Amino acid sequence: MEEELSPETTTPAGEFLAGLRDELPILVGVFPFGFIYGVIAIGAGLSPLTAQAMSAIVFAGSAQMLMAQLYGVGTPGVVIALAAAIVNLRHLLYSASLAPYLRKLSAPWKWLLAYLLTDEAYAVTIIHYHKSRRAPSPDYRHFFLLGSGLALWSTWQLSTAAGILLGTQIPASWSLEFTLTLTFIGLVVPSLKDRAGAAAAITAGVAALLAFALPLKLGLVVGSLAGIIAGLIVERRQ
Amino acid sequence: MTVWLTILLAGLVTYTTRLSFIQVYGRRQIPAWIARSLRFVPPAVLTAIIFPELLMQDGGLNISIGNFRLLAGIVATLVAWRTKNVMLTVLAGMLVLWTLQIIF
Image (tube, rainbow over all chains, first blue to last red; front, side, top):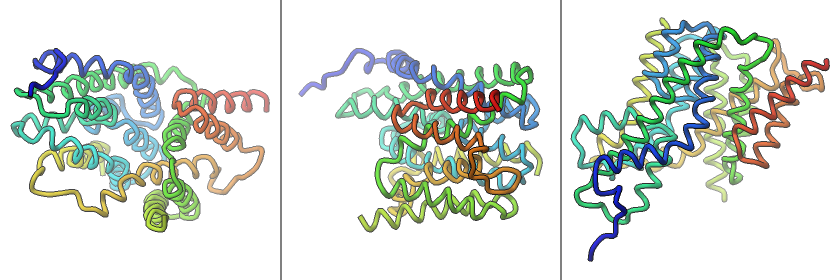
């Protein structure tokens, strides 16, 4: 039986362009996010170079926002890196989910695509991969992740630079750093679809308040762990 | 630890989680308890950041009408719940915060 394939699944360039195209609507939301990160990073006391380097090296929006904020209140580096690690743990799931599709690639390809594996690139890529029931032959679908990943990467670097350049002209009284907290609310609230998720969130929040006085900002770690455990317990009971 | 070391360490850890299963696929499966825990990670971590940001002021708990960030956060939560839209949530919260700051 012949596999029905759309034209863009047959060439590397076609896959690459399809990745770019599917990523475009997401970029509209990513640009302001990167801009605000740049503003917050400078406001927190990071130099323009380190702020931009974080976008290139860590390349993870919410973790970078968190790192900049923790840096601004004098958190030790180890705790900042630990917090970033916890926030980025979800990438394990993305990695596990895409691994079957990328298993035949050479090591350099895997290393490059892993660097580009963000929430936004994963979201469009896994939808694209789920569309084709069987692997096309030859399989150029990794070019799709390359396209979406590079589109996001360029936008993230440019929007960070824009935020760094224009950030110093924005007065502190605008409280722009509060957009970070609001962004997190906008991400968390719609994601709470069941009791276990809600239990995880509320427990984490209350535990973080109770543990607020702990040194080294450990309240964040204590709160997160309490929330995850609460979520698992409630899930088991259901 | 310097800023650069912090960034490199965070970058290394992030990259390792991204590469993990892509690199070792076929040899290891994701442990069940980790897979089950993963979905609770984002809400737990983010709420552990949100609550203190909204409720703690100058090192103490502030649950009152005078806490503008708390009021803005409550409005943002309602908007996020109704619209599921991050940009609208941020806009609504900032509008409430700015309005309260200008009036009072």
